[in-house]
Image (cartoon, rainbow, N blue to C red; front, side):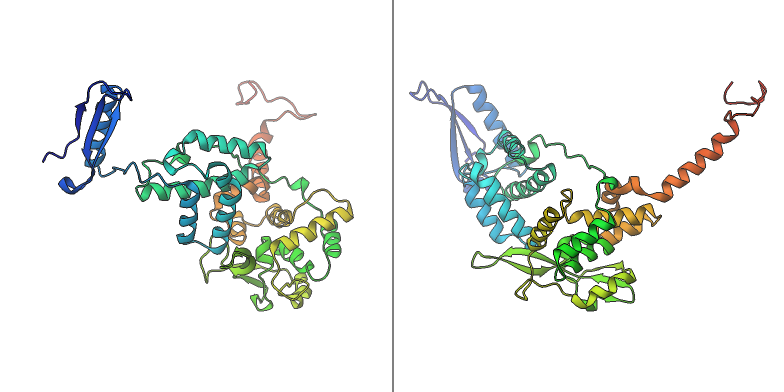
Amino acid sequence: MNTLAKIVDKGPAASGKRWTVRYREPGGRTGRQREKSFSRKKDAVDFATKVEGDKRENIYVDPDAGKVSLRLYADDWLAKKTASAGTLESYERIFRLHVVPHLGSKTLSQVTAADIEGLYARWRREGAALNTIESRHIALSALFSHAVRHRRIPGNPVAQAEKLENPVIPVDDRNLPSFEEITAIAKAIGPRLSPAIWLMTCCGLRIGESLGVFPEDIHDGILRIRRQVIRYKDASGRYTPKYAPLKHRKEGEWRDIPVPASLEPFVDRLPIRNANGGLPYPDLLRKSWDRAIRRLGLPEYNPHDLRHKWTTVTLTSGVSIHEVSRWLGHRSIKVTVDRYGHLTQDGQERCRQVVETAVRPHMLTPGRATAARGAGSVLD
């Protein structure tokens, strides 16, 4: 039996679809026979050509495979996905709050690039920051890429959609808290949580990392940061804090950071605990920080500004940006350069010296005669 697609003229039909393409799925004579009807012969020919081409190139997708709702597919995908607890918790929250309410009832094959672009626009209208939309974009694209790999749909609509521009905005060192303000915040936030304030200020840690430091992690002036505190959903569906690998790191990996001696008095208060002696949520620190900011009448700084402060202090004092990038735990030095490259003191000073050496002999200054014409003056 011939397994190539055939186009059949069924004559005038009530539905108006006169032309029917009959074809077999991959597998030769054992492949399931299918058919699809069209109003125009041209559309039928185009479809038959595409089906046979996809079969030859091994990219054929069963039209019924994508007829599962986005809601159900997301649930199944998240249940089977292998990733860090923090990533899984973040993805689950993104789909539950920001994707499923708007696209959950559509099947995978029904979701288009226009739907994705509409979702971006909705998020922006609702006030989501560009970095937040970028995080949601990554989660959404991961799901549809999985569906493509598993032959549910032929293409990823997220990859086809026009993505919102998210330019990297350099950190403005003039809008960071002063050390006097940081001291006031640490005092207002209380002795139980203040070690986190100074760990972020003195070592450039993220919030979750500051909550994961133990006294034994600091030795001979070096902090070996091994863990962070994240929030995750347990088997009962409840959210709870837990220790997890560092961002961009696998279980057991760490990074070393120099520790100033002034941090030593706070080591005895580690690890940081909540009021009941348990593991604190990162949100506990954020909420305590916000209350302290309001009481003190300070600008709307956020805890991450302390990480920016540490980076600013190190780079403007001439510390190598390669070292700073490694201590920050960035995925690549490009991230560091894009956000903080303008702060590198060594580069600024070297630029001043180079230009001064090249230009000064040719500059006209008060009391100095103009170089004789023809003597090689750049001002001729």
